[in-house]
Image (cartoon, rainbow, N blue to C red; front, side):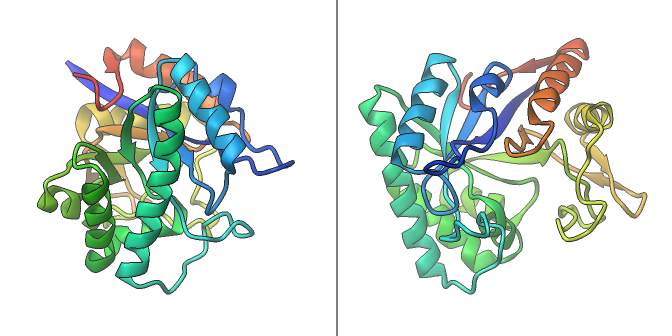
Amino acid sequence: MFRVDLNCDMGESFGAYKLGTDEEILHYVTSANIACGFHAGDPATMRKTVQLALENGVAIGAHPGLPDLVGFGRRNMDITPQEAYDMIVYQIGSLYGFVKAEGGVMQHVKPHGALYNMATKHPELAQAIARAVYKVDPELILFGLSGSELVKAGETIGLRTAHEVFADRTYQQDGSLTSRRQPDALITDHEKAAQQVIRMVKEGKVLSQQHTDVSIKADTVCIHGDGPHALVFARRIREHLTASGVSIRAVGHK
C-alpha cells in the first residue's frame, strides 16, 4: 500500500494583504505549514490559520523563514548557523503558542524558501536547523527536500524526518529543484504535475530537466499555496492519487 502526505504552505497573508486560498485548500491537504511572521504572516493570520487547520483535521507545522517580508523569504541571506538556530527556535515558539492556545498539537517544522534551499546543500546550516527543532521538541518531524543535507541532519540528531517532493516544480539531475530564476522552474499544467507526483510516490523516480531519471523518496508532497492555480492543483492531485490507489494521510498519523 502506497501512502503519502499532502502539505501546503499557508498563513502567508500579512496585515491588509491577502495571499492564497487557505480555507478552500484545507479540504484537500493533510498537513499545513503555517508562516511564522518572518517571511509572511502576522499574529492574527497565524491564529486564524491554526483554527482553520484544526477545524479541518489538518496537521499543523511551523514554516519558519528568513526575515524578508519584501522578498517573501525567497532571497538568500548570509546568515551564520547560530543565527539560523535562533530564527528557527523563535519562529517555532511563536506558532507553538497559538497551537497550544487553540488546544492543538504541532506535528512538524518545514523551513521556507531560501532558508530551505540553503539548508538543502549546506551541512552546517542544516545541522543548526535540525538542532533547533530537536531542542524545542524532539517529537517534531523535520520536513526537507528528499535526500538533502537537511533530512540527513535531522536523522543524525535523532529527529523523525519526512522526505519532501514538489508537485509544481521541476528537478535537476542532482535531485535539486530548478531555480525559480529559470523559466522552466514551475509546472503550470495540473495533469502533468499529478503524473509527476504519482511517479515519485509509486516508482521513487522523477524525470530531470536533463532528461534523466533521478531516484527520490516521497513521504510528503508540497503544493504551493501562493500559486495562481493552487486550489485546482490540490484538488486534482488528490483525485489522481486516490484513483491510483495511494492512501493520503498526514506523516504523523500511523
